[in-house]
Image 1 (cartoon, one colour):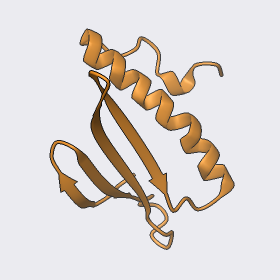
Image 2 (image 1 turned 45 degrees about the horizontal axis):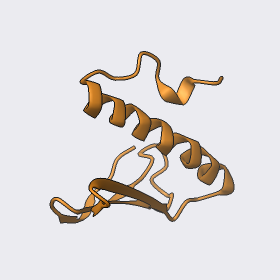
Image 3 (image 1 turned 30 degrees about the vertical axis):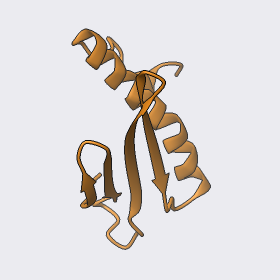
Image 4 (image 1 turned 180 degrees about the vertical axis):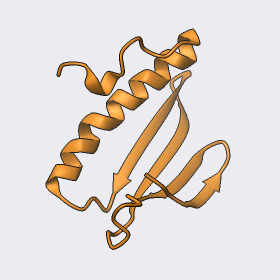
Length: 90
């Protein structure tokens, strides 16, 4: 996937396009990352919009939690998960 930064308001918000370079005719999706304080911790909200199909929605609905789980583990331990989270349960 490739994309372009649409908006960057460090350290709170990042908006990017998200596109498949193999399908230049496809409409670019948009992903927004928002970071905010929440009861003494930090909340990250990821919003993925303009999905092309129900299958794409299903893919990102399982993909983002896996990616974010791996990121959380990396930030907490300095190591990524031993198995790619998107392959777990297969």
